[in-house]
Image (cartoon, rainbow, N blue to C red; front, side, top):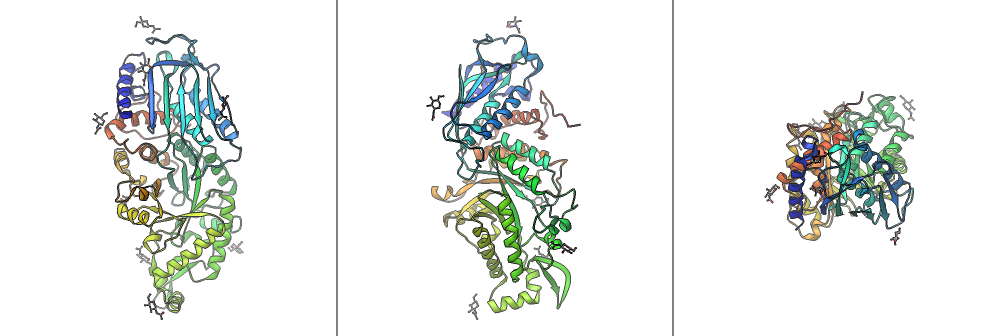
Length: 534
Ligand SMILES: *[C@@H]1O[C@H](CO)[C@@H](O)[C@H](O)[C@H]1NC(C)=O
Ligand SMILES: *[C@@H]1O[C@H](CO)[C@@H](O)[C@H](O)[C@H]1NC(C)=O
Ligand SMILES: *[C@@H]1O[C@H](CO)[C@@H](O)[C@H](O)[C@H]1NC(C)=O
Ligand SMILES: *[C@@H]1O[C@H](CO)[C@@H](O)[C@H](O)[C@H]1NC(C)=O
Ligand SMILES: *[C@@H]1O[C@H](CO)[C@@H](O)[C@H](O)[C@H]1NC(C)=O
Ligand SMILES: *[C@@H]1O[C@H](CO)[C@@H](O)[C@H](O)[C@H]1NC(C)=O
Ligand SMILES: *[C@@H]1O[C@H](CO)[C@@H](O)[C@H](O)[C@H]1NC(C)=O
Ligand SMILES: *[C@@H]1O[C@H](CO)[C@@H](O)[C@H](O)[C@H]1NC(C)=O
């Protein structure tokens, strides 16, 4: 039924926009179709003008700074999309064409109290309802849903002839399919500056993502400036002055995300991927041996030294104070045993404990899990931790290898929670048609009961920064990640590539209009092209 509405609307919108003065373009042909697709969206062939002189939002019930900030943001987005020419001239060709029929005030009703300091979390309610008629209303249970509704509302407004802003009489009911809709950015292979990270949070809000997974350090560099261990970034960052994230930087990113209903989950990946840590923290890493001599190389964190755990305990306590989310990502991917197995002290320890290297890793992980639990934090790990035999209640396993169906089936059947990433490695984009593969990857496409499937909490698109820096980060992520965004937000039945394509083209132009350097999806143009900052 809903699908039929959608098709009908698309066709109607197309016919309508062939007529007006403005040239038909990617911008206009399928305009007023929000992305990701709402659960229920119905627009009548009847519209209202936006009264741009008096336009504003009004909180009718509960309000807080988060909501007020969202009002400011969306008023600017909506009014900013109006051209100068809109202030004069009448709209032609409609049943309702007088200027008196205009929307000046949007009432926003949040049904539960919201406080200035609230944070989004795994249980945030992002559902909302919109009704546009003589009075426009956005209603939500929580402020997080109101924000998603404001985004949709902003996408329902379009420019008619003479450049005037228009919104159709319409009704929207919407909620996300998955509660966890993330994007990973690696800031170690290349340093990504704070303004670009913030810009990406804007783009995430536009695409209804709600988790920024900050893969902040790795083998190559250590840009996180620790208060307790300044040597980590002094020695491990590319540049200790210019290529670091200070405490203030981190707080700015978290706050910017919070105001957009986006959680920031930081990852400190151990015991592997830690070569940069070793530069500022002597004796942390395993010395690799060739025969009976150290060969000058280093391996994963040395799991047999108490000093390693004391250090991690202090570092994670600091991280826990700075990053408020309920979850910390503790990594665990690609642990290479060969260095551990070459080191005589570790060999001796393994012999005494009767451990294999695998069991040694399990021993390490139990200790790190205890450290994180002592901070009252839940954790996410890469699937490798499960592959290597560590199963821990309350952990979310991030599945990234290609045989994801069997891994997710096993994990969820054993009642563990997972998020999926295998299909969504953004750094491997060869051309923009890659979005089709992203779009067609269905997280429920594995053998399991409905109960098992509900243990898939969502997914995450991943951008390793090996070939990515400030110059191309946004372009690499968008609009590819938009396909992931719709997969994770919209109903399972919204999976028709042909139907999605024109909407995605329009969405691409919408992003470009808002200043996001999303790359094109093929030949064509946007009415308002991207303007590079000068
Ligand atoms: C919006 O209203 C106009 C004018 O009545 C109509 O031509 C157009 O098709 C409507 N748009 C949608 C998406 O229904
Ligand atoms: C919200 O406010 C409106 C009036 O502005 C009132 O009619 C309604 O009962 C309120 N709803 C809640 C849930 O408080
Ligand atoms: C409105 O449409 C009519 C006929 O379709 C046309 O003659 C007239 O010039 C149009 N007015 C404007 C302001 O576009
Ligand atoms: C940092 O490293 C220097 C040696 O380069 C050392 O002297 C100093 O004690 C270290 N600082 C801390 C806090 O460990
Ligand atoms: C593991 O590390 C050793 C050096 O310690 C290296 O020779 C080997 O290629 C690594 N294995 C993998 C799979 O990366
Ligand atoms: C060592 O562990 C293996 C299995 O992991 C077990 O079969 C063996 O009995 C153990 N040896 C000792 C001395 O505990
Ligand atoms: C991405 O591309 C690299 C290099 O071409 C390749 O090694 C890697 O396996 C690819 N990853 C995925 C997930 O396709
Ligand atoms: C997919 O969408 C296209 C275009 O809207 C439509 O023609 C086609 O029938 C749809 N396919 C399915 C399987 O629904």
